[in-house]
Amino acid sequence: MTIELAQEKVDLWIKEHGVRYFSELTNMAILTEEVGELARIMARTYGDQSFKKQEQPGSLSDEMADVLWVLLCLANQTGVNLTVALEENLKKKTDRDHDRHKSNEKLK
Image 1 (cartoon, rainbow, N blue to C red):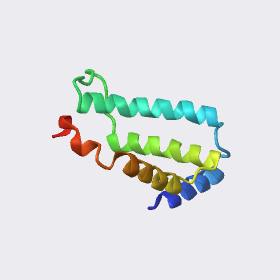
Image 2 (spheres, rainbow, N blue to C red; image 1 turned 180 degrees about the vertical axis):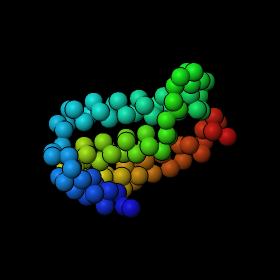
Image 3 (spheres, rainbow, N blue to C red; image 1 turned 90 degrees about the horizontal axis):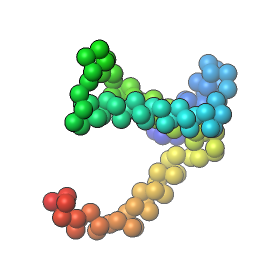
Image 4 (cartoon, one colour; image 1 turned 120 degrees about the vertical axis):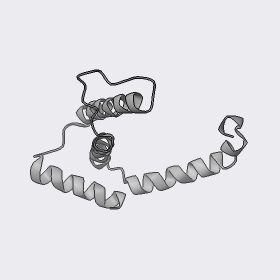
């Protein structure tokens, strides 16, 4: 699925099942919450923390999809074409950082 198609599918789902988008500010708060849930799994799976005895680990892929979902909602609400935005961002990073990481001793 392309990013463009993902934006379209989310918009269609919202219109068919979600009644309307939550406000942009509400979705920003939800995005922050979802990133926190993803961070919890990452910290416990790949970092130094461990899961609590009664804590269910959760699904890394599902949490990533939740983050993407809300980001797609915000893009739709604010008129951002994420395909174009990502292409422009990759160009910016390439122009700015084309040799930067190759000379980083920490990465060798």
